[in-house]
Length: 393
Image 1: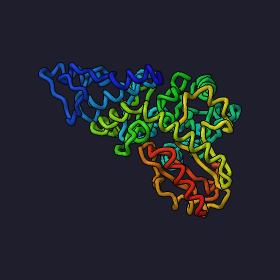
Image 2: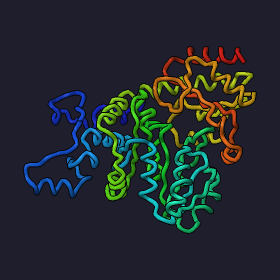
Image 3: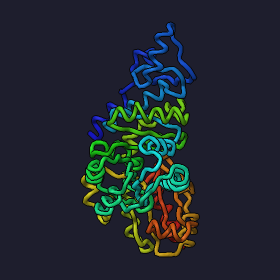
Image 4: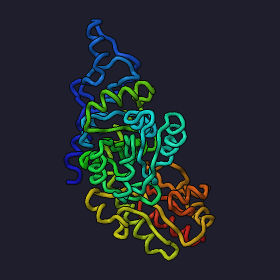
């Protein structure tokens, strides 16, 4: 059975029916504080925020949020998960928790654009940090960067934004740990079902739960997971408290709801994504398709080793100029134009259309690159939509 272990986690971990009047769906704890009969009990709870059942103030912890955290930690084979009000909030917290003034960060060129902006526009000028950008595929380049003084964190994304580059998480983790450097990976694209970075030695795995985990385009949130309980309890939860960036209880409840259907949704996304990607590779007006499920992917051997599957996000290069790429997606009717993904609706963008020349050169990507996200409208319907847009070119 697909995801045998994960299905039990998703459907039963942390639900604890006997605590919630045997409700099959646990309640939403819409409260700002928790009270105690004795001052001593309050003090005990306040001094042990990571202890099971210790709740004092909503900025520090919430039972509904904790239910979600327990499920995701178990799915990722981590000791603890900490949920944030956004994926970017989680990413920033990971950097703040592992770095300090003057730290050196090694970052893949292909990671989520706002993460790079946070490093370049905030961490570098305000904290005197330095950043070295690397491809992620050249281990010699990676080691040279890691050996620089003050190296504290390696930031990865695999598969990564734009051309879906895949990097060897096991080897990079070994290399970083040899020099005492922490590793972080954005695992949003594959979810905990298709990739478990912590089992490959990565220190921190991050998910933007607005995407596949939520699955319905109705919440914003992020989560960090690690096997290092001290890092999570002593540092990352404190950073979350200071920045007041905990996930809201209603968003946590929606994310739990999304998790319950993740196995069936992710398999449907994979089937559709694979079919659409293969169809696009055969189209005469397509120059290149970037998708981890294709045998033509440059890291196909590595993908077979560290991924259990593929999702429905890909990018396409047409045999045409950037203006033609924009005209093409404007002719699509089922693929709406929007910046996020992971929900039920299909999306298309030309994300680098307005990028500066130096950014295009830095990313080594095409200005007319089209990012396609295949939702749940059905493979045949999406292919028909794409074919109709091609006919209009």
